[in-house]
Image (cartoon, rainbow, N blue to C red):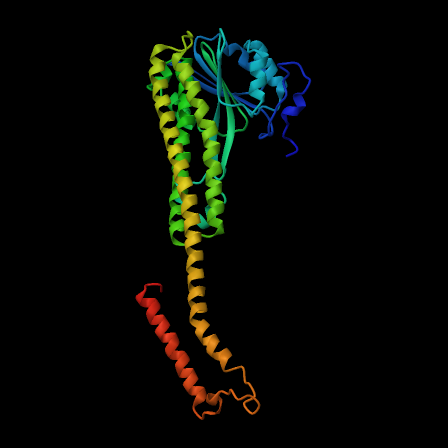
Length: 373
């Protein structure tokens, strides 16, 4: 990825130096604003960052959403006007951040991960496992949120998100969000991201169920590869969700004036959802460990069955090989006083074959009674 900047590029630079670290996921930076209160609703796209300046001190609630992080001068101008610390801007540009929260006197800074399937497959689509297993790859995008007194600024790496339900609620003038403050808007954005985690886990659960059926019916080498892929997805989800519990917990415990008491109740609900997600991930971890054990047991059982069949065949042929070898020695009876009179019998060959058949049948009957076959 030639457009992906690495952390090493910041080596030796001053703290707060604005360098985009991560993959460039959009062609150009787009700025959109939704300005509203209980009676007013206005939505528009901004051509230049300066058009967003007057939203800082408005009495209405403003949601400024920025798609694209690669044009650092835009973030620098926005940060200077909204008095966002350079270290916070640096964290916004570093898309490898762990979910975190920082509180300032005039704003709260929150970082979290938005997850989605790259192929946008539904749960029903996942049932077609032969076609979709390879396409179900979880994509991550860092979302940074600045919560101010009357504004919320969200920073996204790419256009497209999970905030459509929030936008629909904002259009409805009777919705709770239109009557609440910026902290409730920030809660709604966080809640939308967390709710999408449940969709990811449901889709993952469908894949696990399909894999379990395959594991019990016909495990192959591809089955083990799928187990390892799901294991990586669970670890990936765990890294995104576990730290978020600390973030929401810090918001609940915060005594910052930007978070109203009424909003804390809703944040607790998000916290409960995160705990449910973590419990589900722990169950997935246990289930995947069991699936690996089942796979290894199935492979061992299959190998044991093969060895069992080969052992029975070898055991049956041991006396037959002995008889065939014995009468295949062909010593010269004219020289040695010890001879094999059977070699000169008229019915010697069919008699030996009959004896060998009787021995084989007798051994198979014996093995059957012992339940070895």
